[in-house]
Amino acid sequence: MSALLKKIRTPTFIFFSCVLVLSVIVTILSKPYFTERIFYVDNYKYSFYSDQDNVVTYRSKTNDPIQVKLDHEKRTVTIQHQEYFITKINSSPSPNYKVIYPNGHKYEVHDASGILLTSDGHGNYVSEASTFVNNQRMPQDGEEQYSPSTLVTAAYPEYHVTRGAPALLYLALAVLIYGWCSFRYRKFQDILFFLSLRWIWVNDPEPSDFYYFMSKVSGIIVMIGSLWIAVQAF
Image (cartoon, rainbow, N blue to C red; front, top):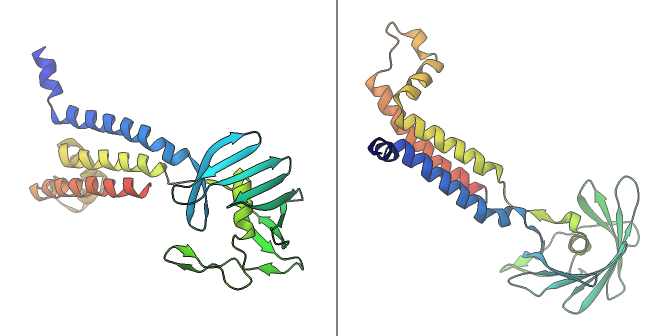
């Protein structure tokens, strides 16, 4: 029993136990963030809220909700009590969409390998560059309140996206363990020394005290760097 308690108290056991617990906690807490599909309307983030009687509601924490009525290939997008009508036209190789505004203006949106391009009723492409002031979109003269591609994105879930890069969390975990091993274990430091092939150029191929010291320093730096990598995942 005393031997088991002694083993549990070792830095190695404590480190890997903490890493395991932290990994489980981060996985559970971050799963909704990485799996939730979202889209943006004028820099406001929207996500799925409800689906009732063929009406899907998307909500933003800082703006009015958006409702999308489903009718086969047609969608009716309602924003601030204004209805926008969208019809999907299946064409090869990518679908096109017809968008009709409450004011009667009509546009076509073309899916170019996932990139939505807009043209007017005369077939001329329309730029959708927008001006923002204090994070508020300021429509210019002749510009619609919501761009056609934005409405198509809201209407069809295949254009909704997920956030973050969860693979970076796995990379951060690997880097953290590598840094710990570089800091803690003499055998691991020896392996890195021989893998570096620096011993080929010396008469006495043995790591110096300075090498071991720098291995510990680099291990600490690598572990700190793993935290930076983990943050970049979000």
